[in-house]
Length: 63
Image 1 (cartoon, rainbow, N blue to C red):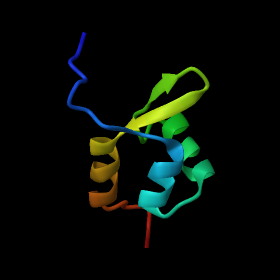
Image 2 (image 1 turned 135 degrees about the vertical axis):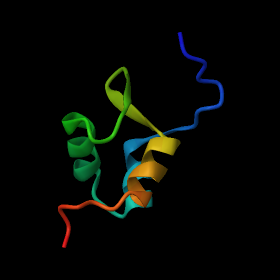
Image 3 (image 1 turned 120 degrees about the vertical axis):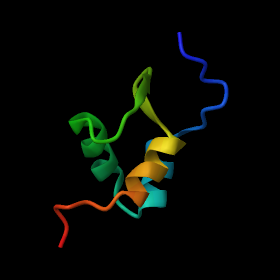
């Protein structure tokens, strides 16, 4: 099992705020596999490092 003690997990709302998108957009990214997430009960938690990587990586579909 991986050591997750140093990983900070964010809620969908926190990710949406960081990315300046709607909660639904974050859910779409999670369900499509573009943004990794862990499911806790009925909610998702996204590693902060994955969010930062997604923000820093330009999307070739835009523009």
